[in-house]
Image 1 (cartoon, helix red, strand yellow):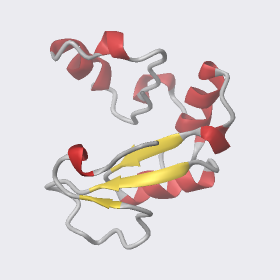
Image 2 (cartoon, rainbow, N blue to C red; image 1 turned 180 degrees about the vertical axis):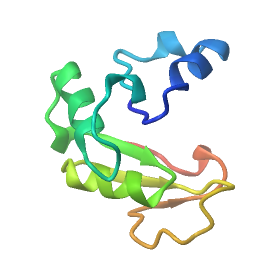
Image 3 (cartoon, helix red, strand yellow; image 1 turned 120 degrees about the horizontal axis):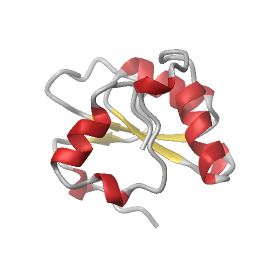
Image 4 (tube, rainbow, N blue to C red; image 1 turned 135 degrees about the horizontal axis):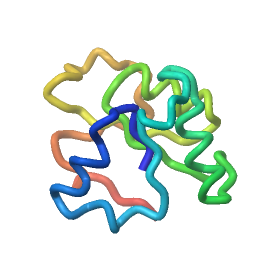
Length: 103
């Protein structure tokens, strides 16, 4: 998990999602903010994975730019606060992620 939010760990814990992630990078690491790729690069480093082998899911233009700057593949996720203005999204996904298949 790589999130710029300083509250993402609390949210993941509240919904029982925290154990699903091997690493958790958030706004509390004091890394440069998106569109800087630092948060995504740091997560890939912790996972010992080449950024080129990573796929990021994002719902904002700055997040998409950060993922692309990190050299990762990007899947754009439409949300209520991201109203189709993000024309650089590689793959548009509707309100639910069940519309895509990762091979």
